[in-house]
Length: 137
Image (cartoon, rainbow, N blue to C red; front, side):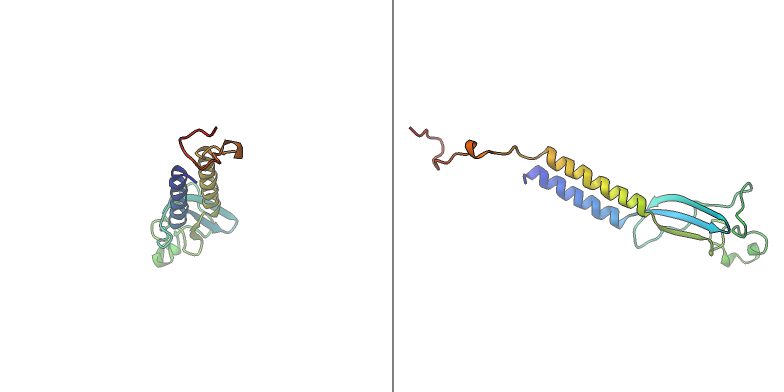
C-alpha cells in the first residue's frame, strides 16, 4: 500500500466513524391508521434531535394525534413545537440512510484504493543481480 492509498484509507475510516457518530435521523408519527415518516438532519448520536419537522396542519389532522381539543388543555402531554401527542411521535436513527452512507463510503474508498495502486511488478521485471546501477555481462 502506497502513501496515497494510506491517506484515502484513513480518510475513509474517519468518514465511516463520523457517519456513526453523527447519524441521520428520522421523525415518525404513528396514530390510528396514519403513519408519517420524515427524514431530518444528521445529529450527534448522544443528542437525539427534538421532533419539530412534523406538525399538525389545518388540512390534515391525524385522529387523536394533534394537541387540540382536550389535549390542548394539557400541554405537558404534547411534544413541544409539534402539536402531536408524545404518545404518537418519535425520533430514531434512519438505518437505511446510514447503511447507504456507509456502503457508499466503502465503495468510493475501495475505488480510490484500486485507482491509486502501484502497477504490479512481474518476476521477469525484478532486478535479481543485487547490484544497482551496473550492467551484468
